[in-house]
Image (cartoon, rainbow over all chains, first blue to last red):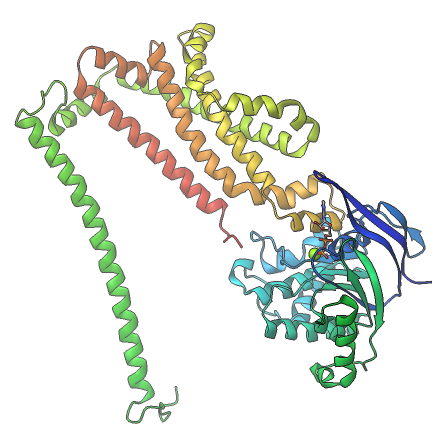
Length: 252
Length: 284
Ligand SMILES: Nc1ncnc2c1ncn2[C@@H]1O[C@H](COP(=O)(O)OP(=O)(O)O)[C@@H](O)[C@H]1O
Ligand SMILES: [Mg+2]
């Protein structure tokens, strides 16, 4: 049995113009330690699915099981990261990374040490006393990544975390994320509309299509690990990208 | 520094280049300073010009000195007013009215803003009424308040409270509501409840907008008290202005207006200074 199991998940939002079906009949299994990406065009329900996985939104129908239990509320062993860094500008970088620990009431001494380790891990050693306003967009996402790991959650839910970064920074962040994932063995669900990014990072890719949001298919990525940007020259990489494009119907 | 290091340009040593950079920086600094001095002089010059025109037109008799006193008359009147025995007691009355009005208006604005922002039932119950009350000019209440609360301080404080409450209430509410939805999601994902979300996210996030409210609140508290004293009072700066105007002591009125403006401005500056201390961070 997987760590997270979804069966026939539906999500309907009630809006001013009537009910809006955001997800219909979504079923999947996610195993512990897996790197999963959700790929699809805007509006296909990626963020909605991620919010349901995080316990922030309620499914309208279906079953969602996490670690053998029904799951419908936020939990401290699930961490979330967004397209914007959502750093608090009145807190230093160090204080931002310590936010989860403070809110969850974790041991102060231990959190202080962990913050140092994490700033090291994301390559921001020496920036602890700076404020977010002094950092570039890429550096802020590194801080957000450190904060994501601060309370050592088991599942990482990432909603287009590098979507606002330029191509070069995004690629660097992808490599770093893989390095950190390989080191920590977390279960990751990563939302992106960048197909190449999904193939580069993932074990499996959930391909989603809109109107209404559906899980069109699941692609197993057949590329060796650990991966470097070299794999982009692998014919299988290109093959996967084209498969997914076909599933999404974007080839003309 | 490595003395033998040569720059890419033939014939210019590192030292010569460092020198040029230092000269450039010094030059920039000097230009910036000169610009600052120039701007100060321009502002000062304009002020002096206005006073000069004022002086000439009153001295030359273009306007009657009784209607518009000259700058020198105003200056002497200021001395006369400030050394009069009735002055300080009246100042005391007005200052305490302003202080009470400001304090009550500010704190009730914050409390109601927080309650309406944080509790849906409170919002549903009272928000429509607060919005409806916010629209008409509160000054129309001044005569009624004097009837209700009498000629003494309570009626002035009441007017100041009613006038300064709304900007503080609305700015608190707006500040607490204008928050990045993802930041709220982050707090929820960390299992933070209402109180922790308020303390860690909503309140600090609201401070810049709330401080703008404090400034409005201050200006309106002063306005409310003075208007209240115009409408009906037996003491206070507003009462003095009204009485002196009635006696055609316009120079005295001018000096009171100037003193009141200086006082209001000093406190305003103090609030701005406080604001720069409280909001030390740069918005993202
Ligand atoms: N809170 C909400 N209320 C109403 N409709 C929503 C809400 N969140 C998302 N939607 C709608 O659900 C659909 C899926 O949105 P979303 O999950 O954000 O897609 P994606 O992240 O793939 O772009 C969209 O049509 C969107 O407008
Ligand atoms: Mg989205």
